[in-house]
Length: 248
Length: 248
Image (cartoon, rainbow over all chains, first blue to last red; front, top):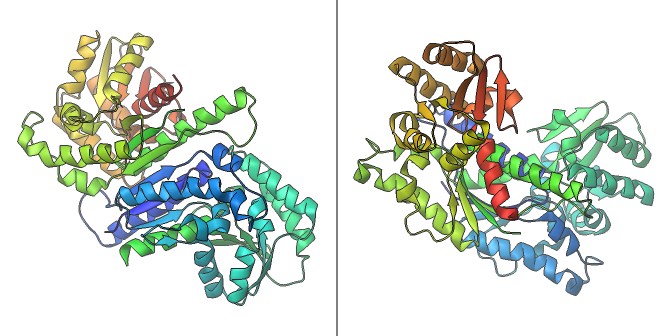
């Protein structure tokens, strides 16, 4: 089986979720095939970065490339180490760096599976036509994710109101420290203001790999419906895409 | 801060516990120092091995070095990759390979913190004089851990009865797949047969990094007392020793 490289630590609670998801898929595969011995798990190398450092290296406007050069290099160097460790394919276990994806993967020779692409594929499978994007400041402010979704027939946008974007950013900073009390309610408040209930299913993309922690029911699930809102779990969708790339 | 290398995946549930323990210690340190930004976490590289492979590479008697050469090399190569990734210090997140520790670390130039030594230090701090060792077949059959503890004034031994050692091994194989139902009771049964209650505190070393999973109350704790038995959590003790080596 191929070896997976993971750039993790940004933040660490979602790295746990990625690793658990990939190992659990492997255990299920091993058991359904009735194979002997302890469950076979793909070899992986995880480069766990310091989010305090990556946070401090964030640049300005997402197309001000110079301002992001140190940030990009911090992630690129981790990918280079994963290549050197023998990874056949890699992922960056976080949405935010995907706003700088093209620059980060410059010169990397192994495939790097994009979370934005994996989520777009899943949204197409689910037949989603309209979606609210919640994430870190770079993910909500940059057009990258919404532009990609648009090419796939999905009208997606971040919260239009500044105070709602700020509420999401504040919530994520608490999730970095693993504090989840009241998080689901705060997300619902933002959704209700940005996508008023209209009798049909509303779709919300949790486009920061920490946000799914707000919904314990969402653990290990790609999506969940709570009343008339379906939440899309980018962490699990990305982890599954990575696992499938190993066994293909 | 120094960078930590972890040889993990043997098995993966305890690798989660190590990573969570080290990150949680870092969060606590960041918060108690009232530092700004997302909590600073040490950079880490985790080489997650395939336990199905390491299991199949196990040799015969622990001093039949030739029979263990492929097993030793599998772990040694992971340590070499951690060195190349820039780790300043490393751990092997599992008790079993520590029975082959001297051979595995041959030629490795960075310090590798032994779980057996870290646990011996903690047992001395706790004033333990006698202890039952529960672990995988190599850990219970080889004299390595008990010999080390003996030099530190601790009389330790694995279960004397074959059926009790077999019960522990069977239990561990279920924990590899994350199944914990009834595990605590099965461990207590072994303890009661091997260390009959005598009105004083009985000490049991959970010397396989999966065994603490049997006691959810033990999560993130170095030890726990349940009635007249104290269980020693080798996973947490080892993770703490690793963390302390980074901040020293």
